[in-house]
Length: 111
Length: 114
Image (cartoon, rainbow over all chains, first blue to last red; front, top):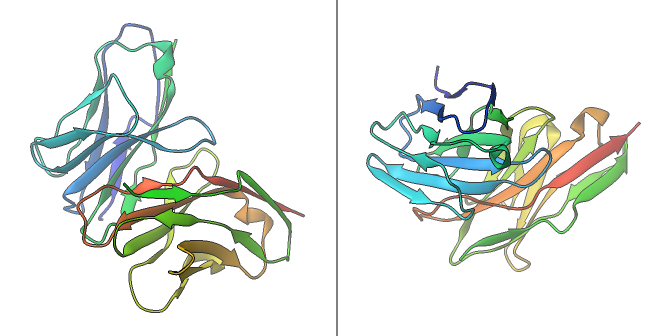
């Protein structure tokens, strides 16, 4: 079934740990995005990709990095997590029509 | 650069009354416009979109939105609100035919009172 998946849904880790948030989509979309969102607040674009080997930083500065080695996979990595990284991270993909499909999100807590 | 404005952080409406969530946009060229809804502890869900054609578009859960090019607006509406409509609503825009990413508004918290 065509969809977009994020894992894990919830993650609690200690300061200084390296983490990777996974995002995969089965719709063959070229464009993928990562958004950061504090609860009930607006979305901030932190990374986007227009295709394989294409990644760009978004509007909000982020210490995270992304990679796009395969069309369907767009993982986000934090090399050394800090409490300020505590947030919800939403992954999305879109086709040429522009409508984006979102994953369920990963709620990250850094203690 | 494109931008989206949702002028109201919070909208309260009584159940059964009509609701409107406002959205205005700024973009070069013709836009694609979208509404998304986010329920508590959930991801964003697509509600409806305007690409071309009829200015009044109908979407999920009885919602509709009207594209007004002269006012650069895309307000979300529903004739009769339900308590279950209470959620966070986001408007988004992308220039037609562009490779640019979606730009979201800041969101409007809709509360439907019983």
